[in-house]
Length: 264
Image 1 (tube, rainbow, N blue to C red):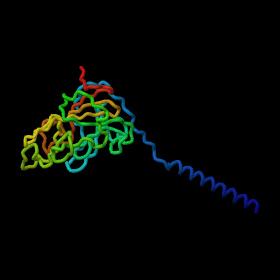
Image 2 (image 1 turned 90 degrees about the vertical axis):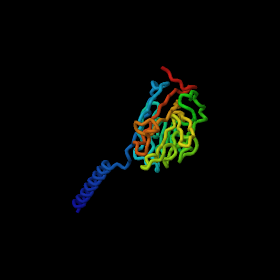
Image 3 (image 1 turned 45 degrees about the vertical axis):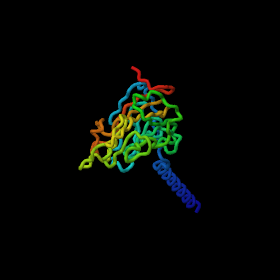
Image 4 (image 1 turned 180 degrees about the vertical axis):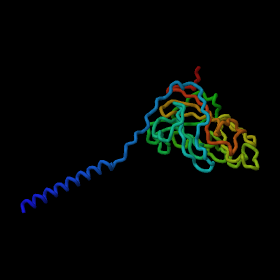
């Protein structure tokens, strides 16, 4: 009897050890926590871009933009002169975003406003617009003038969509800027206003210049030129033209600057 009990106890302990070993092995192979995703590192500003005239051509936005539905946001770094992916949204690696219909809503990168695409990050950017030609904009505005909200500057009020002064004019029905065509090619065209525009009724739209306080507190002025690939003149823009590919010129100056000076 004593030997039988001892064998039973030994068998129980052996089975218990096997169970613990199996449980431990399963626990190691089935982690219960999600892997930690490291946020993108903050990129260094390219100081070599300061006080230079920089040309950006065909910055690719949403190529399936139909002029009726909001497009996915796209981001651009003025401080490194390159497009930034969505994964950098919560960083200071971008300075201007283009979102909404036709990617027509421009915003700065600011982490304090809950409507801004950068909400929650440590960016201090902003944006504003003036009815002046690019070359006439020489002074850096006061910080209080910059808007930090999302979709801050959009389509111009002189078009079929828009509210207030905008950086582009949207001709929804195709009758504001060009004579309407039977094939409807003048419809759903967005006109960048960096050089101004004259409507068919004779009304002159003044040139527009965007001014950005970057995510890191530097400043840039921007001349919007086109939303169509390889096409910079309004007479070249039609509904079937490849879009949205944003082209613009800009001048970047460091924090503390009072003017947008271009140096050799």
